[in-house]
Image (cartoon, rainbow, N blue to C red):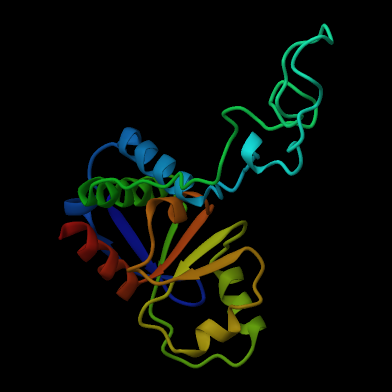
Length: 207
């Protein structure tokens, strides 16, 4: 499926855009997997931390004399062998993030859009040139388009009022076409783009 229907704000189809030169062929799930693992790794906080024996307070005094007690030698009560002592090879704050080549990230964006298109969860609308004053006006547009669940809206070329009136719509995320990645596409059920945003996305992929 390489044709995208362009809808108006009432959900009526106005035209079709042929994207066979971009979205043709099967979905490459391998490249999507590589990108998603990379994006999720960068979201990990990595702030788990433990104290080694040098950082546990106390333990400055030798617990007991070296010889004559029948017990093992001990120089500090903060040894990892003791209760309340340090931790051996415990976790420390770290950054789990890493990068992939730009070509792989670009390919993952293409394949994720292709997957949404094949699943009929990709919607294209005309640019919203009219100013909207209330949230319910934008909610009515979403209702006409029969959109439900988590929605990612890429509304390049629209009136500036769209950002304000869409702010309180539950489960709706608003992003720019230059900031969208494969993880953003796949974590939302439906993708809503304007004609301008669709052109910007295809230009990103073709570069």
